[in-house]
Amino acid sequence: MVALDVVHASNSRLRELGPGLVALFVGGTSGIGEFTLKAFVQNTISPKVYIVGRSAPAAERIIEECKAINKDGNVEFLQANVTELSEVDRVCKEIEKKESKINLIVQTQGNLTLAGRLESPEGIDRKFTLNFYSRMRFIENLRPLLRTATITAPHFSRTLSVLSAGHGEGKLDFDDLELKNNYSGVRCATHTITMNSIMIEEFAGRDPGTTFAHSYPSGVNTGITRELPVWARAGFALFKPLLLPFLVSVEETGARQLFIATSGIYAPLKPAGLLASGVPAPKGMEIMDGVDGKVGSGAYIVNWNDDIATSKILKEYREKGVGKTVWEHTMGIFERVEKVNKLRAEAYSK
Ligand SMILES: NC(=O)c1ccc[n+]([C@@H]2O[C@H](COP(=O)([O-])OP(=O)(O)OC[C@H]3O[C@@H](n4cnc5c(N)ncnc54)[C@H](OP(=O)(O)O)[C@@H]3O)[C@@H](O)[C@H]2O)c1
Image (cartoon, rainbow, N blue to C red; front, side, top):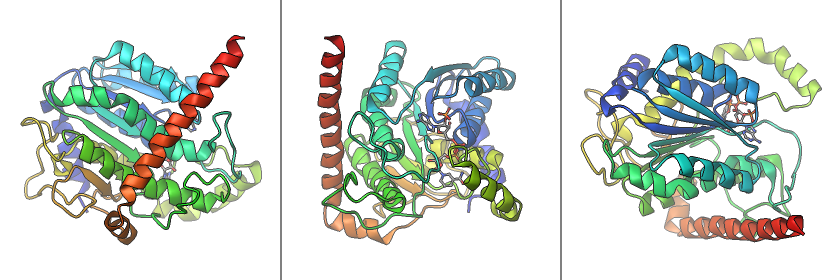
């Protein structure tokens, strides 16, 4: 476990990376995303931050709070429902118009739902899209900007997906990776968690100047239950006092996720400069093992306490070459959805 004072000390050194870091927080309007964003704004010089989510009132509140935290920060809200990839593409185009580089992408979009498979007009499940396809699409679309960050001082380029690394990877149904026919909430969780962990390694192999991380935040007291039916929320509220002692605070989680997003112990495979690995490793700490078990391989699965997580099934899947399968599936879904959206746009314009 990385001690919390070490985490705070590292985060406060983020200023050493200089002014003008650009960051995107998808799911930054609440909970873990909101508090990671605020920790980022607090510890950086003149940051440019994009928040993506649906709730404009929440974004307005956070923008005001960020002004009080750092008057030189610039926080902008891009409203979108990212259960549809066309919305992800629209937001990315907005960012590309304004930025030539992006230093950090943190993704926490998610919800708790008891609903079954809910297919969007794009032909894929909305929950699966929130947890997986939207996250991969943001990274894939913005890879050119992440790459530009690796060749622009301070050469710092990162992505972090907060879901459940090391706590939920399991067997994939290779006949139905998108769970069109065999959907259940549990299978959706298993597939999206496992595929997040596999894809960070695929991305790291293709972009060695960027760190790709997937983390587990532990139980955190956030707004995650807000989309559950009233009876389920009432039940949850009843048990909450019993759970509270076991939950990690949003402030601690925000600090710890920012540490994962910026510390040099999670270095990219091939850092392109002195600060390219982020904040130098705390005294006495070394660069961590990547998900493939090799030191500093650029893709990390990280536990809530900033230790490296482990997963047996990922090792088995690596040996079987499942990374290629999941990569091709994901790119295949992107192509299929692009075709669907083209047809929808043509039909709409008639
Ligand atoms: N809290 C925990 O104990 C816990 C434990 C393990 C894993 N996690 C995972 O951590 C991640 C963050 O959870 P959290 O606890 O911070 O939840 P949260 O407070 O509910 O935040 C979720 C964020 O996702 C955004 N979001 C949800 N649906 C969206 C949509 N359709 N389009 C765009 N944005 C959307 C929400 O913004 P809008 O409402 O503005 O759209 C909000 O900003 C989730 O993936 C969750 O599964 C959480």
